[in-house]
Length: 263
Image (cartoon, rainbow, N blue to C red; front, side, top):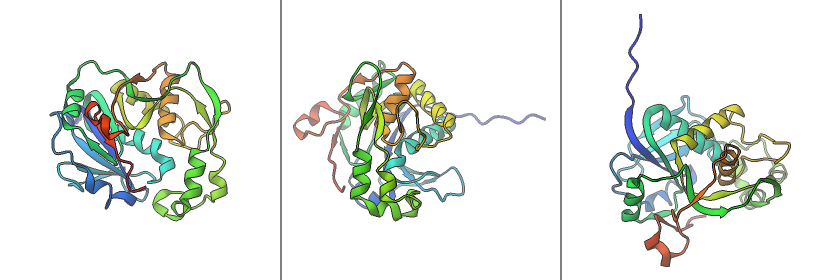
């Protein structure tokens, strides 16, 4: 006896705002996103490794935005896992036509520019502010994540972060990473094709962001570089687009202003 398969709701895409429990009472309270182009539901994403299911939804933390808790560590070093796992959930819940807009939680959105971008039919597979554009890929020393945990050692003690077995010394080894083309992770657009590539790749390494590559070290510990790495291996290069700015004087040209508040 066959059973009917539930029909997925069709959407153009999704706007995903990635946060953590640490900032639910600070950054999230400053998000104002009352309305975007129809067909692009907005979600705030927070990790909780102790969920008994893959995800849970709450009505809202902020107006007109649904909050999605996913079964994932809530730490900075796990952001690539959090992003791709969320994408997998969105693709399982919806029939996505275009892709997703990955956003940080410390942004002020330019409503008009955001609507225009979401309506724009000519989006590329991978778009954003280019952090680095090079030919090829190389092994590279990068101390960003090691320095972050050296300055945030309390993060290792929080069970929500999934790092209680790690010492500060352990975190200092995650300094060998790929040098490749990538966009800054504060706001990035990923097409459905790119989303599927990222999810399938993370499944292939069993969602292990500490996976070591003999040629490139630890590709997944810095999320925006990790996304660039996976897409470059699949011949997808970033396309430059002013999705965000750190300069208030350029806010009129961008989708969002990166405030970088509440570190």
